[in-house]
Image 1 (cartoon, helix red, strand yellow):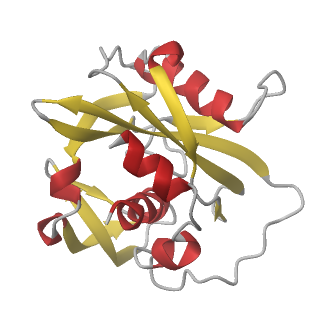
Image 2 (cartoon, rainbow, N blue to C red):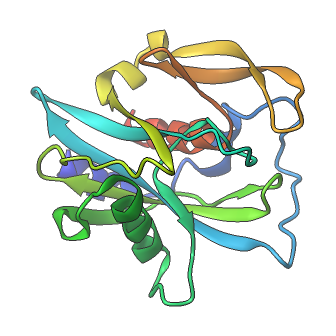
Length: 200
């Protein structure tokens, strides 16, 4: 797995084309990043468990925010003291889920993605842990930890179209993944799809 990832990450990334396969209706390549955007980092963590590789996701608490209750990768806003965006992803993963940064090997980064609704330019950091982490969820931010087998996500069975309600209260039918009964859509699905395209 590690050798494969190193090899694939040294090649051109699948990029926006792979991201747009899981984009919501109306989301295209035309979005202009606003000058006042915020930088965010998320961690896409792979780890071995039960003889196969898993990807970590989490469900946010219902706090009334733009991404309230949604499935996402651990991560958040880059702070002034962060040395780089991967540091941000690891720091946020520690704060949200108790993932020890020293136990994660940073493999590289996937393609950045601009999220207009929150004005964030998000950079996914790809990391690998040598063993399944011991999760300690922060109850104020995380309502559930979701572990998804990589083999399942790579299969057609993981894909669907689902009806969701966006932050403006509009009902939408969107391309998505279904993991443990939860719908993974929007920016998280777009970033996840680039990883899966890289692994195929």
